[in-house]
Image 1 (cartoon, rainbow, N blue to C red):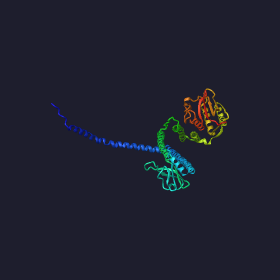
Image 2 (cartoon, one colour; image 1 turned 180 degrees about the vertical axis):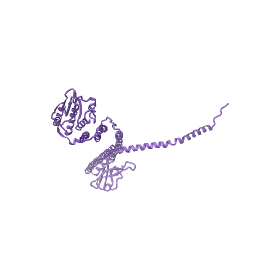
Image 3 (cartoon, rainbow, N blue to C red; image 1 turned 90 degrees about the horizontal axis):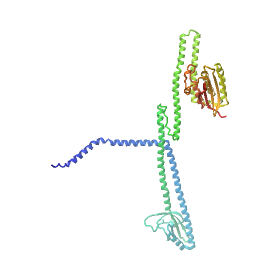
Image 4 (cartoon, one colour; image 1 turned 45 degrees about the horizontal axis):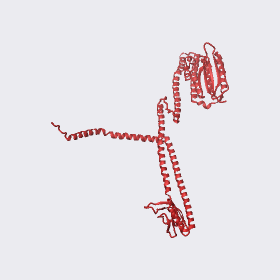
Length: 507
């Protein structure tokens, strides 16, 4: 039993099915082309936007200006070189023609016209010879190696440019030459010239490469400008992104530093230092606000309660007087607190720098120590001070207040319970700095708390039972910073040594 041969229509059916399948896919695939064109258009648009952004940058404008100046300079140099070369060639040709005309005129004077014809005929046979034509007074050519000169060229003497043809050349090619016409005795006309095609060839050899060189300079300059501008813009974008984050409130953000040490790194480092300072000020402001709300609430509440108690319980004029005096005393404490905050703020803002003068720090320390010496003796403390002659540039009122705060802290917290305490104030010179040291024999400050005690309203547990607002050391630190110095602490074994350091004036 033989198998049936495939029907010729089967392939057609398969082809039709395939065509039908492709037809079914057509509507689904049709939107792909507009989508692809749209994506291509978006890419082209983004490229143009990026290019326009590059062109608007200062770096690209500076490079473009430099490129224009350099291109103009190059064109000027090339144009001057071409002109100077052409001038030299023309001068050399003119000198050669003068010498040759004089030589031929000399031949004519010595041997007559026959001698001149013979010399010209010999010269025209040399390879690369000059252009010669000798005619009689009737215009008949006696010797020549040119043809088709312009009419009337030989009528007057002088040097000029002209066109000519060579007798041995076929075709209509025309040459250009610079010629000199000389009229000899007897009416003979002598023409001597040089073809200047070499000059034009040399000019082309200079001009065409120069044009390509200028074009190459422009193209490479633009490419270099785009490359440099993109790198500059990339570094600026790297600074812009953190800046936007910082402006959104994240003060802990910092600008990236590439580590190359270039101007962008220096700018980033300066801005980072500024951001660190701003962050510290903002944190300090927040802490101050919190501390003011916390620490001043108690005296204000106490002030109100006393006034309320006086209204409720006072029966006599003496009770009212006591209540008013207590209120005034509490108000004075609040005023001193706000005065200290205002002084710290002014010192940290540097507003007092305009009032700074050169002053004798030894005299200032002596005055403050003499003021506190009787107070220390009343409290049963040994008080001593020593100074050296030294001058500083600063504000005496603030320095006196800072030293008074240090001595006052020593009087409050520097007295030991089991023995007689001592306070020593020393003014010394250490290199280019001056150091004011206030040392006591008390319990001191733990090393872990020494950085914290200079913050506003910070009071250690041992001092909370003593009167104060926790602003004394903060004010001293602000005054030290205002004068370009610092406040530090060290062990006095036993006790604490507070060291106020600042630059000293030379001398």
